[in-house]
Length: 128
Image (cartoon, rainbow, N blue to C red; front, side, top):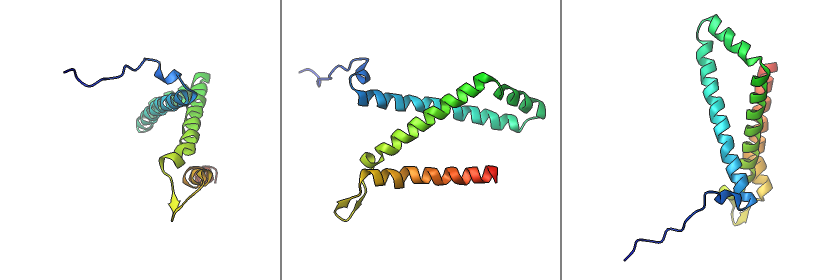
């Protein structure tokens, strides 16, 4: 007797539908965010060192390449956050009694509203 049948999966399985492509792009954005978190750790490490090392890093951050990379990471983070908040009702359906809350309400209350509140608090703390 042979082993269980294992269906072959083509290398480009994610190119078959638009939903799969969006899924893979959302997962790819995680790589950009992880890279940025590593950068932040380096930034914090340099901030704790002498002024010369930190000044060199700040000078590097003034370059156009740095600006473009920061904008790419911001775009990746926004895309990742928005697509995740839109998927929240499917991942975590909320019911009150027998009634299911509308998907848009779950997305707003579970994702967008806390995101806006935290952003406003951060902006207020930085600018205030």
